[in-house]
Image (cartoon, rainbow, N blue to C red; front, side):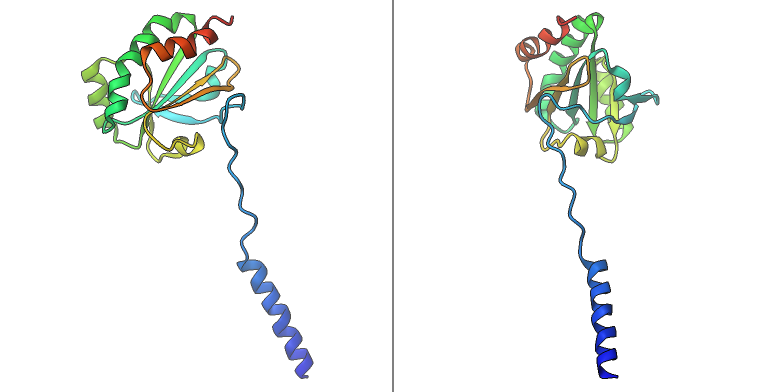
Length: 171
């Protein structure tokens, strides 16, 4: 009888441990040049839905930014000018805002006259998908949707020209 009770306790402990033991944690895939960009869907400032995969065929510059970020604000005029000059060549710029409310973001964009699409990452899920650790972060995708370049920090007009233009000329 004691053996049966010990057996029940032993199997109960095993069952409890199997429920309590964490399964192997999934390791996030490291995003690097050449890897496909993870697809996402976000709402634009105008209330439309933007899906990254819809831009396959374009060179896509994804810029993660915030209104509270001085380097973000400093680089946006250069990004906007580059976008306006190269939109007809198949350049899409997606400005992904870092969890700010729509009113704050809209006021900033309107006050500065930026014309590229602004997406609201209200929960920070897309920034997490792209492993953004600092603002601004800019990611360049080729026409097939593969990551070609990841830039942390302020990006200049000269860097945009050097980094992005070769992908625009690849038709």
